[in-house]
Length: 186
Image (cartoon, rainbow, N blue to C red; front, side):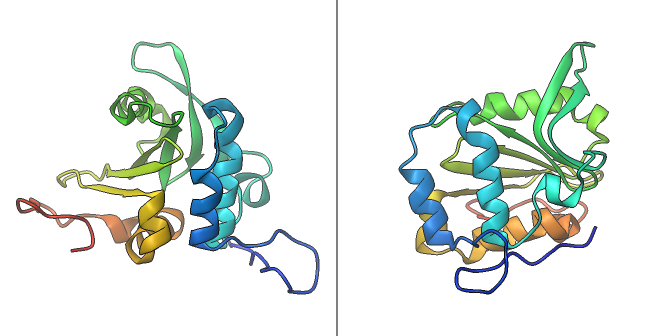
């Protein structure tokens, strides 16, 4: 799954312009679009910020990386992950200020039909949570906001890059229990 380079403004040639973390945060802090209207553009901008391919650039057939990946829920009904990348993550968006716990519960309903990805991501366009889903480990949740991305992007970028490129970098040690007050990156 090779990644193509995303060109920055001013570089020669065709291609999308990369976004800085502060540009990404400014754009999406000001957005008033609803979930349905915003999610794919939000995700594509995230890819541009990280310099990685979008689902259609990487996998035009949607076989291992796709928007709106169909999945059977535990009750047998149909569901869809907003974004899915085999061996990496399943991602569920909600509109701004919506309940991310509901989004997480939704992902749990169809994670098995999505090959039980190691990371489950929920996002309301302002807040992002990456829940680890590795076998034999305690769950860890990496949380950050657009403000975190704007003010101190180091940890959010580390988590996002691992999510896209190397999910095992977010694997908690077997039997590890976070101490009281622990925050990811500390």
